[in-house]
Image 1 (cartoon, helix red, strand yellow):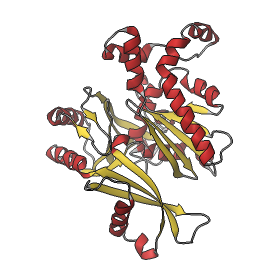
Image 2 (image 1 turned 60 degrees about the vertical axis):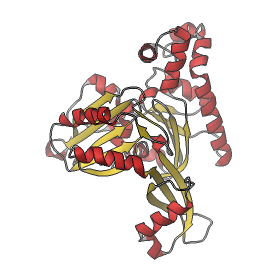
Image 3 (image 1 turned 180 degrees about the vertical axis):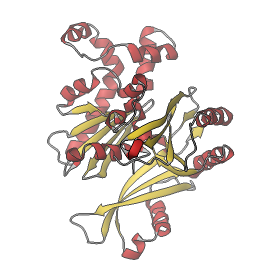
Image 4 (image 1 turned 135 degrees about the vertical axis):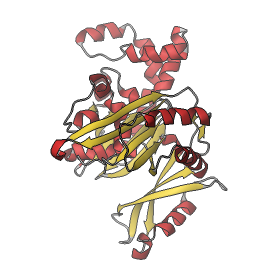
Length: 359
């Protein structure tokens, strides 16, 4: 596994900020996790979408970020910061490009900005990656992945990080790096086949399908961990904070035979909590199968803090009749020094953050 050791990764989510940095192990054998931290954010501090991203209280956000970086055990070359998926608009383009055009990032950024579905008058920053030649079209036709983010939110984050004397090397979209990690760990699973990343966070579920190492399809579903907690809050007549805690401890999916009998009696409750999410997943996957002429769903690897329900991987494997499993990068990194078992178990929640360090 090839990871940056000179950078610190910070993943900004809507419920947590996560931070990861690593060192090479002795004799450059394996890695040592030098910094691994997550800080819960006040409700409503980070939110919005591509057209209206926001940080509702700048001083509070600045103080939380400052507190996290104060605990970093040693200095690094700089930081790479992952942005919430909802803030970033991804778009796959087929473009005819001359050799000179491919070598001119300024021209390509300008051209992509003109082609992207962006509201008139909205200032954006555009990054891109030329993926591959498009089979069946002119030889100079390429598939280009473009990512756009509203300039205002980058300006705000840049002011805060500059004030904190943080040298930011890059802003990135959080979940794209997850595939780079997966590709390093399971090269045999991605060779000439499609794989799907199901990333379930606090506010959104992000589905990304990859074929031969490049992004094929993406959809963001506005249902995830927060929605599960809201429904529990309504059913149990408790506040949202208590519902969030209950969500983390209650059993919803069977792990043993005994669980099956116990959960049958709670079927209505479970369906009310997860039914809409499962229906959205089902619609998404069926559309994906029809669009790309896939008879059977490919392997699904799950990441994100809201995938940590016991038994969810087996349940979804049966529900969608495919191989579905939890991807914990902290288990897959060849560690020269072990880390705390409780933090290790939260590895799927750190997947996007660790992914920012993937080369």
